[in-house]
Image 1: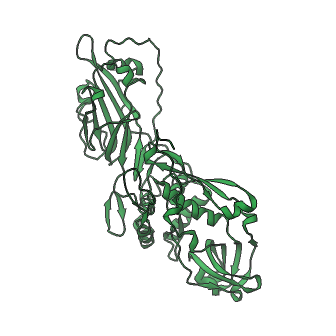
Image 2: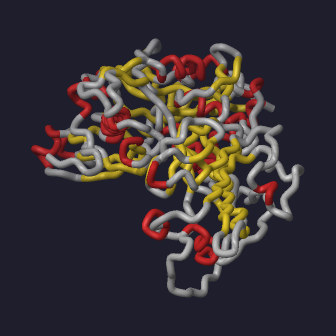
Image 3: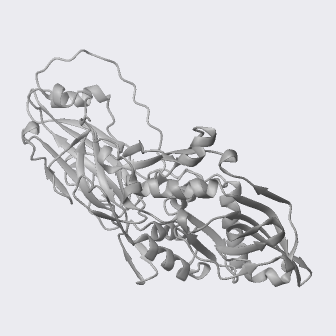
Length: 478
């Protein structure tokens, strides 16, 4: 059974996933008035032009955070209650993601508040005049109902929204409220740290942004592939997790002053309606990861580092091949990689990094661009490292498709790299194995078939000076 499961996961990644069933938030939508009408509670006696508003909000797919992410919300309550003849209290509830999570920061629109991490409270920033409070619920399975919403006639203590991270804003009229909240009701966004993930190195669940551990989390989680631990080669994930934790020096400290960062981190979220293969591809891209089946049929992972070959293929093992391509800089597919990552210092938005250029190839054939997304990488340096690896893999000196080996070549199957000696073609170099299959005649192994690209340790070597020019921070100039 593990072999069949492993083949299904690998095949889905290669061919595209079957569409997921969209499962909506199991929350009660109540008291949803026109947005302008409800927001009027913030503005007191300020006059606003009348407007007719139609609110349409489909049931949203559940969203889950791995690592860190800034998440908006889906409104489930928007209500006003009178507390005097002229003024009202505004209540606004929004679901942000599935839990349990840690709420790290509270934002009102694009403005970070001074509220501490945790359960919220009265927003202390003077602009809000002590009249705006935010409740934060982390999405545990035993969280109580919202104390604020219990003041509404239709809310009761059984409405706990178990397993959902949500916020509730309570606001009374503000002076110049229409300037503070020009869009109407305050839009809450949360910076959250995702739920604990299983680390096979320790055997415990804990928060992490280690790219290998979060990849394993998705394979195990019910919203991903739902594998069991017995179906996974855990030692391979432990090995890659150790690579991901390696400290990489930064030539320029990040805006928080850090001079080092972990080699491969993974931040972001996904919703349950996405194709699983798309989510998996993003997780793999964050650490140069590759899934494969080991000899026992278990799902294993490798990548993120150079692994020197331990096996050599020579001409005595070779039965033939489908295609052998040899190129140099004049035949490169691309000479520049434009890459995108998520920048926590640019409002957690997708940000284009300093392109990775193959200057030698550009001198011969000019600039030929391609684009790569490393959207789960939360740093410019990490994105540049991944772009360097992608350049080496995308433009190998040699590419061999369908290399057929006798059974003597079986030790190459499942290896990350091999040394290939083809003296008649002047080839004696290291190759990465991109794909491998076994040919059988009944129960007898007849041949091994491999696709190879030439690759060496230089693709993974890193000098901090290579990190390039980090994008300017907002409101800064050269």
